[in-house]
Image (cartoon, rainbow, N blue to C red; front, side, top):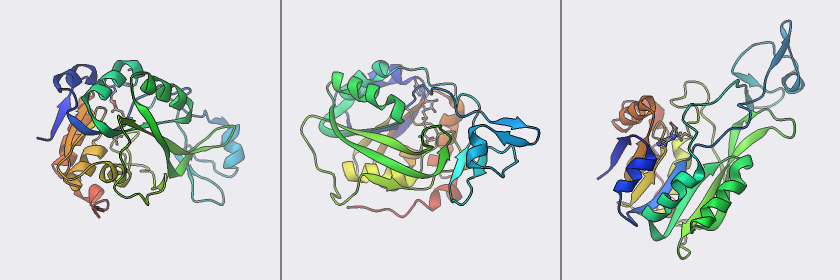
Length: 261
Ligand SMILES: C[S@@+](CC[C@H](N)C(=O)[O-])C[C@H]1O[C@@H](n2cnc3c(N)ncnc32)[C@H](O)[C@@H]1O
């Protein structure tokens, strides 16, 4: 039976027996180095890195349109959310334990933390399967190339298992959710759905141990998979519950074109 749980994954996951889930799919918490690029203003004008990419923009907006481009640039000034203190060692062994043999595990990560995550995942028994890329229509400022993609580390437990649509490429292009987000790092349901339908069948059990606003669980519901979502922050747990109960119909309806194999 599908369920959403409020609490700490480190505790709740112990309640599940070995090899209970057919897939683990999660946008995991990790430490963010700087919390974004600082914007400096001289009078009413920006200076520093933002001045170089948006020379004519004078607004102190969160998102600024890049000149001659469809890309929106994110301006942030602090931590994205409070609950990102958990370390990889604290949850990777349990993810491995509760996943069935010959099954997949997708973990979303940035470039800076990728190496550590892969190493620690392999230390507990996972095998590297592939590195997937989500290309967004947004970017965060950086002195050495702006960040306009995120990575999805695809792991497996046990033997290799083929994905359901072997024609799927390892680069996904879906617009980022800008403004009006349900969670600061909300992921497109379409992206989560592509991963889920490729690595499970209808009726299978999917775990998202860090569900945030529940994008993975919505994708499972749309594709007839059982969802098991855990979230420590009551605010996001409540949002996820309301989403699953279809209280955000207009938001999730566009992602309702189910692609099944
Ligand atoms: C990167 S966000 C996931 C956002 C999600 N992809 C969405 O679309 O809304 C990670 C989430 O993990 C939660 N979290 C952090 N530590 C946790 C823990 N120990 N147990 C359960 N949830 C935790 C955070 O509160 C945060 O909402």
